[in-house]
Length: 316
Image (cartoon, rainbow, N blue to C red; front, side):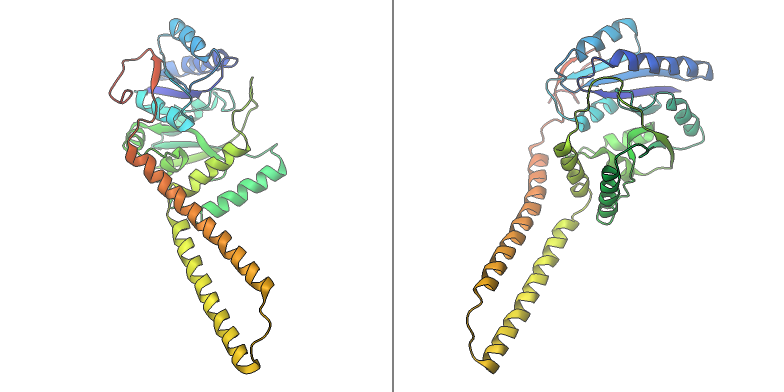
């Protein structure tokens, strides 16, 4: 069985050689068991010497295939490019910063041989800050009440995919991609095991609070239209409350006569309703923006350099 390692890279010059050394060791251990391996690296428009390091690795190891983007298109585009270029019977997606331990590859392969199409590594939150753990739990509890697929806390992109799962994911051509949800949406027999996340070998994460919030919002909006339905029901509820309040005011006026106008009440109601309207417009705008990007039909990424043959998937 040919196993493809797909590793998106962004400014990873300090750790790439070390990562490749580690996965090479695993490849040597799997070779006597009848498993060959290829390495598919995707440089997501790095600003350091990541591409130069990949070129050096390709010169030293004929199993290395790399694709370098013309600019930073994001991790989702990098994952898509890696899956498109992976030719293995099984594909393992993992980060190149060694936070996904390469020694777990052997465990994934063993579980794949038991018939599982997806072997998913679930990270424990041992060592995480309490605030981060509680925030993550709250987010997943909320999002799983809304989305059409189940998203599991601690489950990310680190997983093994069978060829039919890879083909199913590649058949989903939407521009706004949320791979964690796509992997859950395609289904197929899956199994999950836990592992403890390792520390970065070098460099620093490109994720910040803003990026994490946007990523969480993508997960919320990519697999359901319930925020739109919620906005509709919120509008109906406000309309009902306004009708009841109007009836109460009219009744009070008929019984007690006209009282002094409630200036504070009016200002509060107008401000609150304006805020609700802005939130509703924001929700509608998010979905409209996604439709806008879909209908333009632009490619998910553009390639600057590669050591594999260019295909119609790479150039618009």
